[in-house]
Image (tube, rainbow, N blue to C red; front, side, top):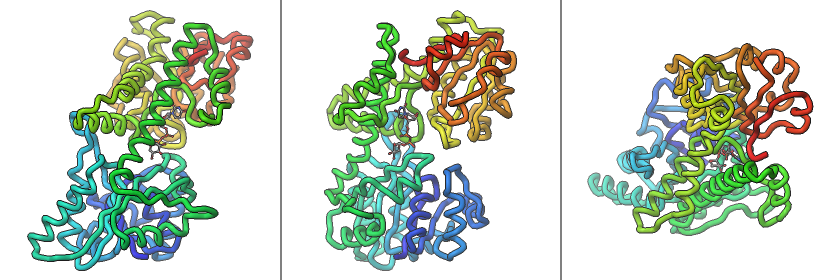
Length: 439
Ligand code: UDX
C-alpha cells in the first residue's frame, strides 16, 4: 500500500518505518528541513534501539522516503497518517493547531479519496474537528471529494517502540464507514500474527481508549508510590508488598514499580489533558487529579530524603546522580524526574555531577544553563568526592556496579536509590547507608 506519514517525530518515524518494513511504500513528511535532510542521508533525529538500522534498510530498498513537500505527500498515500505533536496548552488541554493544519493541507491538495488517520494522541472529539476543517477547505475549493477520518492511537513505549509496533497487543481502530475499516484492516493484516488484534469501534471510544490506558497506568504508579511512602513510615517493605499483590492476576506484576515518579512525553501530558477534558465537560476527575498531585510530590521524594539526612541548606554539598533520562533506553528528557531533582538540589546550594549512558547531550541542552550542574563522562568519575550517590533512572549498567569503588570514591558510603535496585540488607551489611523507596 502507499502511505503518507505527516510528522517525522518519534511516533511518525516509528510508524512509517515499521509499515515500510512490512513491504508498504511510505513517504514521511516534516516541516523541519534539517530533520528531513538528516533522514535522507541515513541519520535519525532520535534515539530508539533498532530504528536507525530499520530506517536505512527500508530507505535503501526504496520503500521509505522523506520530504518537506506537502503537495507531494498528499498525492502519495491513499492513507494519510497524522502524527504531529499535540503539546499541552496553558490549561493542560492538548493544542490541536498542528493536527488541524495537517488536515487542512490534505484537503487543500487531495485529488481523490483519502483515509485520514489520527495517530497523534488527541482529545475526544478531534476526529470531528479534523473532518470539519477538511470539509471547510474542500468547500472553499469547490471540490466535493470523499474522505474518511479514522482514530488509530499508538501504544508505543519509548525504548521498545519497534517491538510494540511490530507485535502489538491490540490495534485500536475508530472508524465510522466500511471503506475506511476495510482499508485499515488491510493495512494491519500483517501485524495480526496468531490471533485477531484489531478492535474496531466508534471514533470517540478509540480516542478515549488512548487516554484511558495512559491514565490507568499512571494511576497504578502513583498509587504504588503512595503505598511505598506509607510502607516506609510503617516499617514495611514495599518490594514484598509489590510481589504480594502482583501475584493476584487481577492486579498483575507489570507496571507496579514504585520510584521517583513517572515522566516522559505521554503520562504527564495525557493525565493533564484527560483531567482538562473532564473539567470542560463538568466532570471532576478526582482520582486523576490526585494521581498528578501524588506524582509531583514523588519527583521530590529523593530530595526530601537528602534534606532529612543533610538539612535544608545543602550549600557546600556535592551529589553524584546516575540516570538523567525519564527511563532507561532513551535519551528523552521530557518531564524527567532528574530535572526536578537537580533543580531542587542546586536551588538549595548543592552541586550535582550527573552521568547518563545516553541522555547526556540532551540533558546538556535542556539543563546545561544550571551552573551548579556538571556532567561526568562515566559512572565512576561522577562519584569522586561526592557526599552521596543518587540513582534516578534504572539503566542496566547501574544494577551491578562496583560497590567497592562507590565506597572509596564517595566521602561516605551513602546511596539514595529512587529505583530500588539493590538488596538493602546486603548493602547495609557491607556498611552502606542505603535509602530507597518504600523500604
Ligand atoms: C507510555 C505508555 O506505556 C505507552 O503505551 C504510550 O503509548 C506512551 O506512554 P513511555 O512514555 O515510553 O510509554 O514510558 P513507560 O515505559 O510507559 O514509562 C512511563 C513512566 O512511568 C516512566 O517515567 C517510568 O519510569 C514510570 N514507571 C513505569 C514507574 O515509575 N513504575 C512502573 O512500574 C512503570
